[in-house]
Amino acid sequence: MEVTEIKSDKNYYVSPRTTDNIEGFSMRKPDLKVDLPYIGSVQPRRTDEIESSNWMIGCETLDRDYADYHQYKEYIAPLGIKVLRMQGGWAKTEKVQGIYDWTWLDNIIDDAVERGFKPWLQTGYGNPIYPGGGGENLGAGMPLSESALAAYEKWVAAMVTRYKDKVKDWEVWNEPNFADNVVNTPEITGDFNIRTARIIRGIQPDARISALALGHIDLEYVERFFKFLSEKNATGLFHNVTYHDYVYNPDANKLVVYKMRQIVDRYAPGMIMRQGENGAPSIGGAGGAIGDHNWCEFTQAKWNIRRMLENLGNDIECSVFSMIDMNYSGNGPIRRKNTKGIIESASDNSAVRPKIAYYAIQHVTSVFDHTLERIKTLKHLHNIGSAGSSPAYSYNTDRSISVYGYFNRATQMQLYAIWNDDATPVEDYEFKAREFRFANAKLDTPVWVDMITGGVYDIPAEEWSREGDTYTFKNIPVYDSPILLADKSLINMR
Image (cartoon, rainbow, N blue to C red; front, top):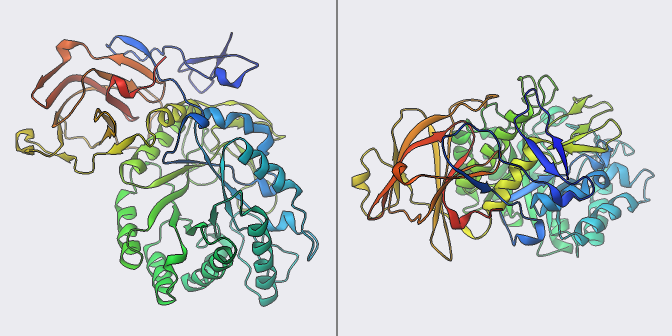
């Protein structure tokens, strides 16, 4: 076994892996400097070992050759994620009017389905061979001319007919309120979504269609879009509504997302919210959304898993952007490598190595799957004695901390995901010892888990106590990345 170093501005840990077998991805005991006994690490699980979960992974830009699926496909199954977001690539498929060459997309869809993955295919971008047909770059405008819309509809129909037995999840258009699309009103976008969804539903009645794919959360845009859909009696065409929201602190957008949910529920009660694209770069100054911050691999990993677990804790489906670095070119707004990938790429799109975020996401997918259910009634109480029969928690700091509780549906055992949520992630382990109390809890054998490294640690008997169903934990290390207080039975360990 060769020891492969995970490089960053600082070397936080190393990862033992076999050079000839990608299943060898794993971590050794990291030096976290926590005063707890190390007892093992989280065992990653492959896609075929997980029935279902909240997670999706971005396999975008394949239609413009900014990335190559076949260079990184072996890395997907060990990540433990099933749903892959992709663009359908009208311009790549129809280079001559009326002639479709599906070879490139067949190779990807067929391989993905054979491996047990579920493609989530977007009907974009545009096609400049038609006047008014829109463009194929990030932020390019949607087709608006009569002839281009007719050609677009034929392409969508042909694509759905071809892949209806392999693709169930569709998305209409990427970021209609961004770049060249800003000239479009929410009503134009609504009409475009409706006409696309009706084509898909006409061919594939059980299709799950994502609406909107908002580039940044604009509440007025959301309101007008859903008002238009409602007036056309078209909200029922869509399974979920997607949005993309890049902010430096991954927890800073909760209020605006809540307001967006209120709008959606007013017009389409119960519609699923899906964060369709979100991630952080692994180097600073790389361009793109939030690219001007001084990022590194460590802060990227913190950002990604904080956003994943914040979404899970608020019943929002979550797609991580993206599987690999993308080498942007052409006339789009980004003309350099987009380093939001969790795998580093070379200039020829080949996969170089997984980043720290890759391993951190493995730990999240291993623990948080369909067997866990969120404790929806969990409340933060300063006086834990007032909890009554409701699950509740308290802690000994005025600092803002995220706490989300889950229980195993079969065993009722619990775990709690905890992190400091008041700032952009920093490039350090800045632990502070905190005291937590949980009322109406169930943890027979409590352990402390660091989700970045996957390290699992025993909590000594003198650091926790139990009175009935109330647990008190002392000197628990907390920092700006998720840790777990969990019953040991809920952690797949090695």
